[in-house]
Length: 524
Image (cartoon, rainbow, N blue to C red):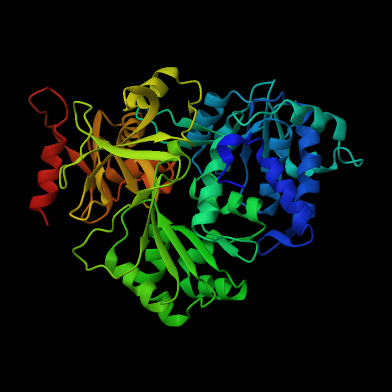
C-alpha cells in the first residue's frame, strides 16, 4: 500500500480507520481500566460526536480537547476529525495560566472537556477563575454523544468528507515557546499517513499487536500509538499514569493485557529499570521496545535487554515538527556506559543531514552541526505564527540546487566513525527533560512574571538531569516555587532555586549563563 504512495492520493486518516473497522469491527480497538471499545463502537461514537461538532464548528477550525486520556477521549478526537476540524489535546493538569494561553492562541469556538463547566449565565467556568468569552461553548463528550439519539448525520459528514484533502490539518500539539507563549505545531493528514505507513512496516506492527500507551495525548509519542492501531487493527491499551509511580502495578498491567509493543519516552523506561521493577516481573509478551525523547543511558537499556533478550529495541529521534520521528536505529548489541547510542538512519521519504553555521553540509565524522530534515511529513508550521514558521522552516538547496522546505531542529549532531549520526544536545536554550521539549526562556518568563522577582535565569544540568533556577528579588525560594506551580507543568519546575544579589552579565550585556554552568560544575 505504501510503496507506491507517491502515485496515489493519501486522503484522510478516516479512510484507514474505516478500512480497519471493516476488517476488525468487533476486535478491541482501545481499552483502559474502565472502558473497552471495539473498532465498530469507536467509529460509531466518533461519528455521533462528529455530527454534533459539525453543527457548531466549521471545517478547518481547531477544537481543544481538555480531557484525561481514555477510550472516550480517543472517540472525541476522531469525532473532531469527522467534523472536518483538527483536534488539540490539552492536558487538564496543565496550570490554569498555561491553559488560558493555549485557548487564547487557538481562539476556538468549542472546547470539549470531561467536566461539566457550563453555568446558568451561558458562560463557562474554566480553571483559575477564567471564564470563556460568550462565543465559546464548553461541552462534555457525554453531552455531545447524547445530543441526537438518532446519532449520525451521515449526509453532513459525507459532504465534509468529500471536501477533505490530505493537506488538511489533523491535529495541533503545543510545545514550549521562548516568548512565554506556547506554540502549536500543525500536522496534516498526509504527514501522519506517510509516517505511520513507514513506521508500521519497518517495525512489523500488525493487528496481532497490543500497544501499551504510556504518553499523554498532548505528547507526540502517543501519535505513534494511536495511528499505528488505526491503520493496522492493533489494540491500544491505555496505561493509567499513576501506574508509573508503582512499577509492580505497571508490570502486572503489561502482563495482564499481554502487551507486545512499548513506544515509550526514555524516562518511562528508565523509571522501571532504575526502580528494579524488572526484578519483580518481566512482561514476557513484549517483543518491541521503541524509545525516544532524550538520550537512553546504556546502563538502563542493558537491564531491559537482559530481561527481554528476544525483543527488538529501537532508538527513535525527531521533534514534533517533523511528525514524530525522522530517524531510527535498530539496536543489535549492548552498549557500554561510555558509548552513545546513534540516532541512526532516516525514515523513507526523508533526508536528514547536518549543516554548519554557514549553512554548508557536514560530512566529516566528529564535526558537530545542526540536524536538519527535508522531505515528506514535515509539519505545516506553527498556528498563527508566520514569522516563527518562516524562521524554522526555510527554503534550502537540498539536491542539485533545487530549493526545498526543510526544518531546522535546533539539535546538534555528529557522525561517528561508522558514519552513524549521534545526537549531541541542543543548539540553543531548548532542552529535553523528562521526555518533554522545553524552552528555558518560558520558565524564565514565568519566573519574571511572579511577584518579588526582578530577573531570572535557568540552566539545565545535564549531568544530573535537572533544571536549576536563579533569580534576583525579595521573594523566598519557597514562594517562587509555589507561584511557578500555578503557571507551569511539574516537569518545567526547577529542581533547585537560588536567590542572587546580582545577575552576572557577559560581554554582550546579556545574562551570563556560562557563569551559572561553571558555578554548578565547581560545586560537584
